[in-house]
Length: 250
Image 1: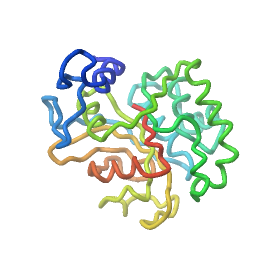
Image 2: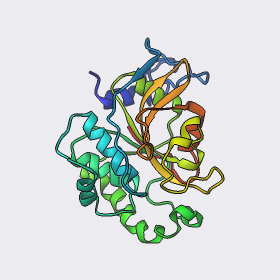
Image 3: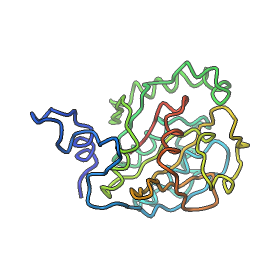
Image 4: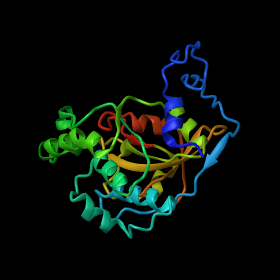
């Protein structure tokens, strides 16, 4: 089994670093979405965990990851809540939780720290001023704590490549109001979903990809259904919406 660091090093290597012309394993994936692996689809059986409140979707996603890895040291979301010690959960909080349980992961984001530009967003308005110092401190201490955070954007094709390798799942921050697909009617309206609403931060687990259908399989903690298939375009728009910082834990 390839370690994640090996896969990500090969995937995100800058073309030409090996003296070649950029066509090697580290080159970016082609824009037509062709995946340079033998398999066309791969799905990891991730146990589905529903969130209990409007704010704990991220904790539910962490619990799904722990159960997928067979780690029974955590018995429920309530235990993660005690460890997290906040109901205003940011991706960096989830990173510290995964690190506490010795999960091997990579954290990608386009913004290091809390983005003050989000103060105008309804979703962030009430908590942002209180969260800025705490979140910035967690980012500042991450490297010393053994958490590597990379400031870069990754594409949907990059994520698909990693999923098809068979050795990776992801926790992604998405704009729930942009996650527009046929199954949304079955999602619990825990935050009064409205297609025309402002940014609504939400975490999902991405655990599979079908290249022929161009769809990702996800686990949505706000849904009563275990398995959801989301078009690549829909997930990418939701992942890259203003407010997400394109946060993803691979």
